[in-house]
Length: 321
Image 1 (cartoon, helix red, strand yellow):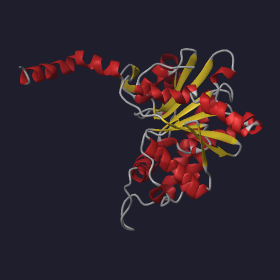
Image 2 (cartoon, helix red, strand yellow; image 1 turned 180 degrees about the vertical axis):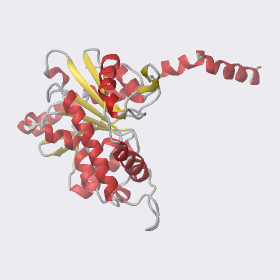
Image 3 (cartoon, one colour; image 1 turned 90 degrees about the vertical axis):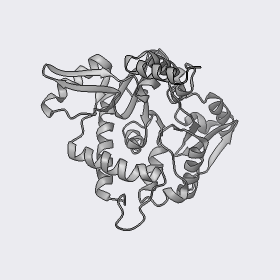
């Protein structure tokens, strides 16, 4: 099954599970074991397939007006653009939090409004948990770790904090509960985005053993020398391997992940006909390199936007002749 062209549409390979050559080759090599492993073929089910895209924040602009909540689709959000590469026969549901606070008394109404207008399922996280999960763990610990920024002394910010880790797991559990609520069955496809939700694959796998789950990491993945400094390294690696397909921006990031799996978990990868996989508890987890880019059409449309016309005229005058 093919998707639209364009580099940023490579993200859709997670949805289309476009590594059929590797699956066919592995079936020859691994025999019956491969047949018993979880399958990612989209052609295995008849009827309409469902893809649940999970991200930390929904591709929605929200504003509280006197007459009520107003929601606008954010076309510039990456997860919103990724939808364009998903085959038409898919029903796409978005799961994520909002960038604004919603009063507890309004949450049910907001959830219904978002589902009706944009097919989005909002995740509401308690403010204290969200602060520790996002600003604490994600931004002060995971982001620096993945970008090679380590604490230099015992008093440095960014040192591991078990309370922040617990908030991270708790927030991921909240996402898991919403995904489970949205899943019609364990045959739905779930596409998880970025380092905010790295323990979500494990939580979902415990609830739906046969769930078909993809994970795409929008950030770099550090070398094993850096990643091994993190106290919960094994938990994160094992959770990522509970996805069926893991996507990275570049081969270097994928290579670092494979090195971590080998040195910390003792798991070696297989390379066959250009496809990379790791066997993990009877499943073959695909590792794929998916460099992303901009939406060219969206970029060209920007030239005609009123707020940029003055700048275009300014540049034309500056470089005239």
